[in-house]
Image 1 (cartoon, rainbow, N blue to C red):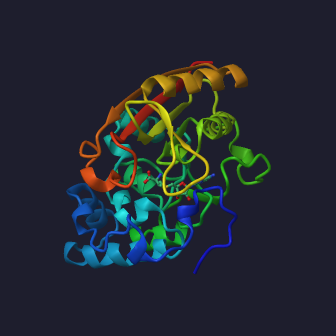
Image 2 (cartoon, protein in one colour):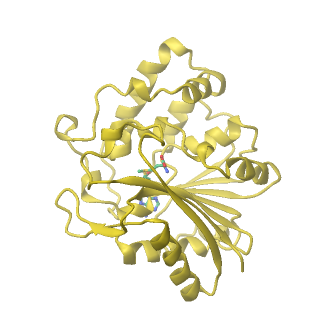
Image 3 (cartoon, rainbow, N blue to C red):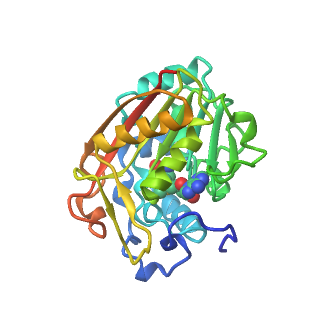
Length: 286
Ligand SMILES: C[S@@+](CC[C@H](N)C(=O)[O-])C[C@H]1O[C@@H](n2cnc3c(N)ncnc32)[C@H](O)[C@@H]1O
């Protein structure tokens, strides 16, 4: 099945033949790292000897909806949010009642991790332009008890009725592996959109593909370049957004290699040289 949603995502996300995609790896079993095995076993009750079959089946359900590199590579099986240095603070805030919005939630894997770590799911919102929410329920087998809310919406939309109640009310916005799909202007627009959900004291946290040299790159015959941030350009982006939205942000950002993320070094072989991941925490001061 191919969804009919209009694309704001890159062209490569359109349905495509697995065999021809450089980022579809037939066997993603090595992505089943101990944290994920534990989550699947203890949260989802998928016995270890069935987990490999389970994740391959789920990966293909997701691939039939969108041909994202992260789906083909299975990188969503390597936890990211819980490895952020501020994860314990995020967890504490959500346990204390904070509202958390995961933008580009995909199958809602970061939300499930928070729940497994003791956070209540009631104040969690997973937003995605593509509805992979049933795939997520199939992956985690928690349709009956996960109380978080999934919303199919474009985060750039100013008219979505489902997003309206969240504006100005979100304490923590998680946005991982999403912003890098846009050029500099596109990322400014997207971060401006994210700020509309925040209030003083809110955080915007996550990661995206970055590079020690901030630059525009063109990949896979895209006509529009993607913007690669380094920590300086990332801070600059929040300064510009702050000026245009009347908000003020303190940002911290740092680069990690793919190996440091728990991925394979050559997962980025189809991208530009020196590619890295940039992780970030932006705190709204006013
Ligand atoms: C590469 S995946 C990252 C998934 C997850 N956040 C992670 O880090 O593993 C990007 C996700 O963002 C979603 N997305 C892309 N553009 C979006 C938009 N404009 N609004 C909401 N979600 C979007 C995609 O559908 C996809 O599920």
